[in-house]
Image (cartoon, rainbow, N blue to C red):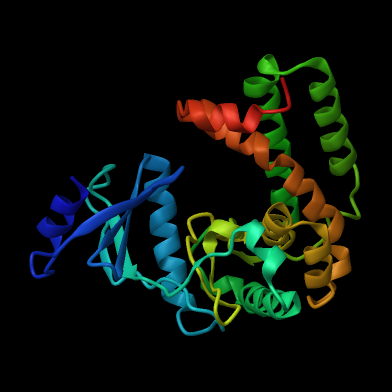
Amino acid sequence: MHEERIREIYPELDIDHSEVIDLGQNNDVLIVNDNLVFRFPKYVEGIKKLKKETEVLEQIKGKLSLSIPYPQYRSMEPNEVGKVFTGYKRIEGTPLWPYMMKNIHNEDRIASQLVQFLTELHSQPVDSFEIEKKSAEDVRNAIVDLYGKFKDKLFPYMNETSKSEIDHNFERFLSNKELLSFNTVLTHGDFGASNILWDSKREEVTGIIDFGETEIGDPAYDFAGLLSSYGQPFVKRSLSMYPDGEKIFERMTFYKSTFALQEALHGVENNDREAFESGMRGYR
């Protein structure tokens, strides 16, 4: 079905073969001729994200030290699942999965590359982007909203201990006004292992993919993605290389604590049983 859509929009593109490599949470991913990556959003909400992502990628092209996707193929209309897609040249490398870190000889080199990338990304002038501008207060309000959704949609499935721990975690975080005083920046939004590509022979990062969650928000959120993937020692090392990195630690740790529940919430809202069960593990 997806290959037919690509042929319809780009009849001049010679497709020898195609392969579905990833049925991800938000997008179907199709590899064409081994060197092109096409992404088809699964949900209407995903279409909005793809359009936002495409605009951001247009503006940051050539401004970052690592390779990022450039959507040279695109179909944005009609606004329907299965019709909308983008396609870009495949970036060299494979995901830097957490278990691979154990065999890396120079973690500092990896940390330095990732921090340089985030520093560059977070330094982009936010006024130039035609996406929603969020202040620290807006970020706080979004956390309040997320907390409400957890209570409404996930608490009915949880044990009492889990509910109490989540209440304490959110209320302690939201009551700390000093903690929620920061400048918002352009973030990647899903800065974890599956979106960090590397070359195992050269032991270096080659590119960053999937900007579907990009937004103007808290820089700590990107480090929370690293924390979730690679653990505290690696991220502490990374934060020591980032401007005022010590101020990020507590917010980063809080965000990371919400990731599993966000997956469960996605499952509830999109009728994705696997995501729900995965996210709720340990809370029932």
